[in-house]
Image 1 (cartoon, rainbow, N blue to C red):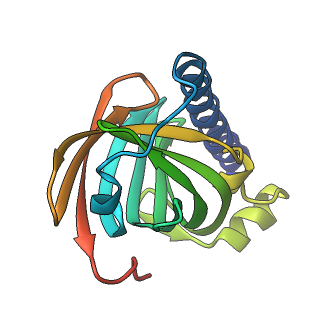
Image 2: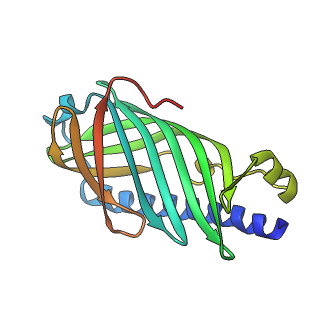
Length: 197
């Protein structure tokens, strides 16, 4: 059981590292060809709190995101939500959920907006194995290792570009690339309050 849990911890850490590396590489290439972004007329439409929930496939599992992002007039943003990772290890499925808070900056063009993470904090809530919830403290005690957090693998300064497909006062449809380079469609819905845990 200890070996399986060690494999699960290592798999989660590897998945987080790959996600950070891939998105960082995409951003490095993009900023080389498009070094400057000008103020656009979509800024006022983005101000406020937006809820989104989406997921995409990763190596041997899935990555789930749910939460709200608030875009401020000073081009800062805050994210409050949950991120979950579903990973298959030795024919067993491990499902790990984190509370996540992040802050950063954003800028826009006429067709897209770019977010850059300045600071992120993640706190593991629980891990499920075969639909049975296991406490994080027990996993750490058995494995003898600290449970990995998302912010250990996603570096500050990581940026991502979202292309606006449909812009409305209460809903915005956007697209970006997932970790495998596939198109990921996300629907953002206007909210009055931040994500509640």
